[in-house]
Length: 380
Image: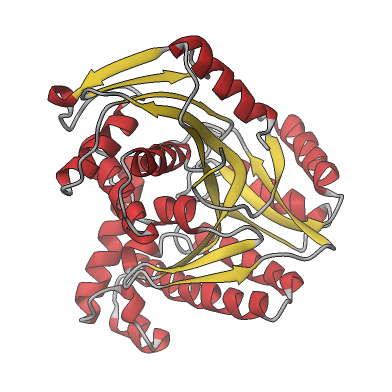
């Protein structure tokens, strides 16, 4: 049965195209539970899919034209096969990029009429773009009766974002939007793409996701600098990637540069925290995730230096308000935090953070309870 947010998209499709869609597909946003800046170091991450999602209604066309309408913007964009050129501007580039990636990989993809809507918050680090790509890809795979296994779908969606849109993201976002299972987090090995579904449920606890509404500042340059320092440290240590450091103390002793030592310490200890998180969750000890979240945040703040005052205030206030643990989530320099809180207290904890923000002169944050949800799929 379709939810109201899905019905809105279907009704907009009917109005716009004077026809019924052939189907309705969804793909979720995601939040990273733990494992930050480990992906490009060939390490481990553990995201989970959110209930917030992109809904897409579509039907095939007999030509090589794609018409895409956004319920959110009220705009319709149309492009044909000749316009499938990397570098296309506009939000429709994410859809065009998926068509391009499928065709570049040898799949026969015909035209389509599509209408989409999204309740994944934009600009908050919850992967609204990956949700859009994965919803479009899932719909086009079904409409064109293609056989593509789930991980390969995620890889194709990343190809669209990397090579067509031009955003140098890793695979985690598309993997989470494609592969996640309801009630679970996704343990993902960024080197060999091995996955494991990890239970993420405890009736006594819930996960607060709070958007600090902090504009991301200097993200591109700072991100590039962090990545370059990690690669330089790996070179000096003689390992393919920091994931391969097995003796942290010995590695730190080999490095003369204190900044490189701190960057290495974050990545190596963060990988270890992801593995420990898998262990405690598989044993049903969700409460024991709290100290790992706390340690992750301290490491991001002190060793990787990617937090900002609003983020730190939100994390500190969440703990003071009763969270078992809290940390920044995402690439840093703004965006969201997550906090593990007793069930039913998320609003109260978020309220305390809002009061602290008001007292500090910061813009009001937004929040919701993160419910581990299923990946991209057809719902009608």
